[in-house]
Length: 113
Image 1 (spheres, rainbow, N blue to C red):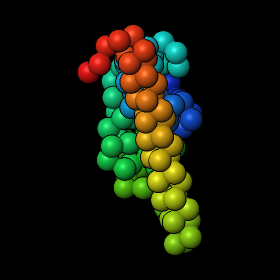
Image 2: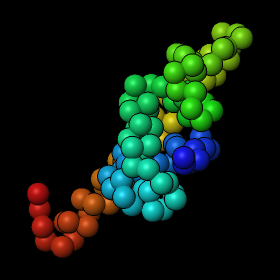
Image 3: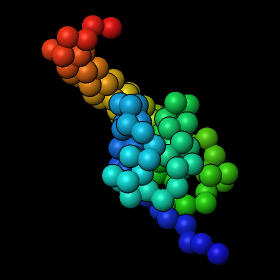
């Protein structure tokens, strides 16, 4: 029987950011030392579905973790939503920068899409 690996939320978020920036799953796995490609795809699906709270869930708690952590107050829920929206903006900014650099690279080489 294999042991389960627990990755910190920061690694999960970094993997999602890399995939959104166009980095291949294999490259993400190599750079972040992730053992299973399905895991990266799962994190990406959680991100797309707005379930980034699941990045914090313990190993093997996918089904019992529910629809989100027990939030004790509206302020906590709003803080979590604000953090999620900031992460989405950061990813978008990184993608736009990557896209701009690729476009400049292609223009300087004489190739115009």
